Length: 474
Image (tube, rainbow, N blue to C red):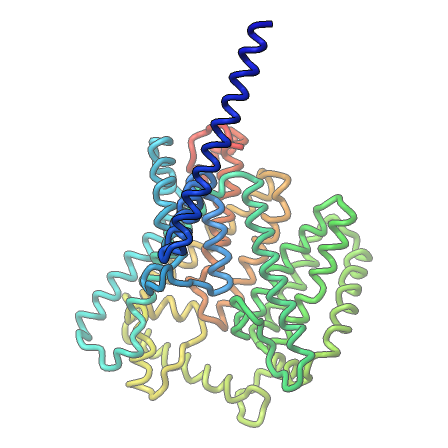
């Protein structure tokens, strides 16, 4: 009985002390925040809380950076232009990254084939750029020189890939990142349908995200459509199937609304691959599914301008044709790029140098709008070879995941493999050879492989093994 009274008294004293502490802390904060420097102190307190949160859950920092990339949002902190939120988050993530490396006593990321290939591409780009600088020490049109900017982007995206691989480490985190990305893609695509109802609508462009460029809009839509389709075919939930089909249906239509010829080609490849991949379906079921999607897409196409469809399906480089002038400019730019490649096939002209050289020699500062040509220009034959090898390794890894990877992520593996093929098709008509989409697809592929290697000891015996077998962290 005496022990019970002592315990009750101790508990009451603890509650009293906590209440007194809370009152004193509240009074202290009110006194500080009511002054002239109150907002500064409030930001400092919130910043401290966010730091502690990121140290505990660093994968949220990666997802925040992902969202800010998609929204093209990079606000400065306290009005300081060079201190921007994504860079600040990246700097904070270096701390848990260092602790993780010390805990593992191993930098396993260096054994990832894609990281090795990216590092090799970086070395080739530096060599090519250095050689170009030796020949052209003076930039005749410095305002068109993009060397520093593109090298910085390359390094920043490689750092993001490392963060992604170290902190997106479980099936739950992988699914979270995929669904977050799908939510952004669907929202961006829906904004195109909204703008289509407004007067003066021309080529479809999204209100935010990468889809603000009509050339990039088709891949964005089909990236989401591919993942949603395989979720539809893999999930056992009827509600999940209905929602997936609901959000999937408008995406091909929006891709066509862009008026992009490359988007039309991607759509044809997408339809072919979707039919081909349904190996367990009968021919009748395949036809019914395609007819259903076709009818719903046709209904949505009725609100799209006819000029967009004509532009997407016209490949005539004539001034009178719809989009003919744009196509003629692209042909001329590609011809000029091939001439530059022929003059320097080994190392190319260096990354970021094409626009100013093109302007001086041909009177135009347009891009070639072809990722393979861009790789040849930036680093020569060696760079293009490494670039294609990167795709081959990632494709084979996805194939392996479909057979032995986590069953709950099968739809992600299948969708990413189709998206990788669509990326190769999109690269024919767009400068995306080192875009964020590539790093995201590589990051998700390697992250799923890491989960498989942690879950299945037998997986570490294959050629893509880069982890020591260890229990998977929840």
